[in-house]
Amino acid sequence: MTYGVDISGKEIRWVKFIKEAQLATCDRLLLKEEVSAHLLKQSLKSFFVREKVRRFVFAVHGPRVRAKLFPSDKVDISELEDHIAWEARFMLEYDETRDVLSFDPLRSVGNETWIVAAAAPRDEIKRKLGLFPASPTYVDTALTALANVVLRSKWGKQDLLALHLDRTRAFLVVISHGNPILMQEIENVGLVELRLDKKSLTWLQEELRLRRNLLAQDKRSLDRFLLSGEAALIEENAKALGERVGLPGEVFNPFDDVRMADHEDTAPLYSLAYACALRGEE
Image 1 (tube, rainbow, N blue to C red):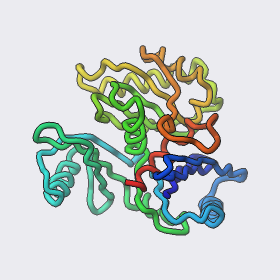
Image 2: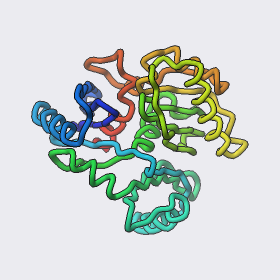
Image 3: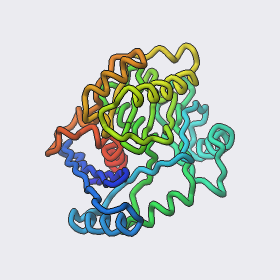
Image 4: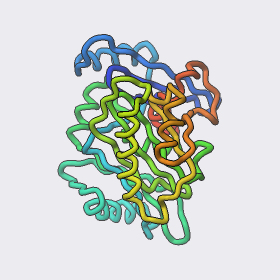
């Protein structure tokens, strides 16, 4: 079994996924004191001991984490790796002396393989790794985690905009015909209240509009808006923000296709942690 770990603000969210039983357990550790590296490190150590964590995957995020989808005509894995590294230098401004590059082959269409590539700063990953008492099975990015968990859900084949929105961070993914065509982190998030007021709705509407305009004209027509994260604990937020972007809005429950042992009322919080847990079982 694999644990998915997602650190957000003053809490640590985790999901334990038992693949054989298609069963997920989730919970969060609330940090009451001022968040510091020392407090996070001690809290993670206690959690690992208590849960006897052996395998885990965690999500890294930050303004310098980037992800992009593109097609490749390469099939051999060694050729694919070289090709993606070459493409990433232009598409992600990837610098092998500064960044770590990862990629996921999503699916093949004709003679092309669609790839999601992600680049994250080496120093940021190293800093995050220093918080954990053991080495992870895999390091994911919040952007690819959100894309993967939506693609695996019942919504994966629709054209949609998915937003994971917490008090201090937000991640956006646009899915088109089973592929994530846009993945971006929204910066400078600072929600005072979880219930989105007119000011917050207007700001988010503008952020989503700007990013939607990055899409090709024929990709801007979407079917649905999905919301996860802390803001999704208030169902009205999904409907209100959906109306602002002209789409039916719904709360995204990442556990739709598995049994949950507990905490069903807070399921939208764990979309990134659950994606990480799934990653460890691949």
